[in-house]
Image (cartoon, rainbow, N blue to C red; front, side, top):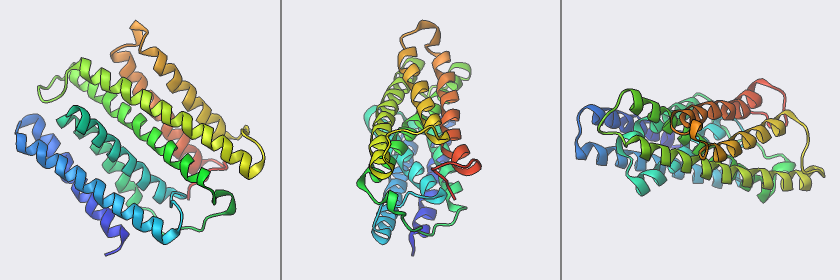
Length: 264
């Protein structure tokens, strides 16, 4: 069994968890929720084992190409979901976020899982910290996206197995705040790393500019929750739109455009 087999087992676990959450919406059973949580936990443990395995083989945090970033994004999102589930018991709400997580992991499995060589500029603890803070921030933004979709679903197609709108709104605001704090740390560490590697804290390359735009967008969202007209549906729509900006910054620039953060 190699690390790809572990990811395939994790994908199976997440797929079954999504099926359990979907069934729970229409057939409320306590055992379904427990089974779904156990499947998600199994998937996270399998991904963690795979991450540690690849880390040991590479000798560095292996998050340098499209396969490894999609995989790490998926792992961070699943861990983010576990945080909310353990703290708030959000139950069938896991359908939305775990489906998104399943898409990320399925996309990763289509890519080459080979471990690339680490270029000298990346061989520093600042790189690892920058990556960890970045993708944990992305994970909370993805969680906010899922909660935004959930809010709209519950508003227009209410289901007794889903949390009340006020609860979803609270979780969404917390997810945005945590994501913003982590992404702020990502930019700070990234600036220190850039100065160490190239002698400057910030450059006007497309990745740096769009990362700053992501930061500005979510800084605005941290304030928008206090503005009445942006509360509720407006905040949910902003959460969905914000994740579109995140995906463009992560995938659009890394895959489609020429930048200093290429993804292959």
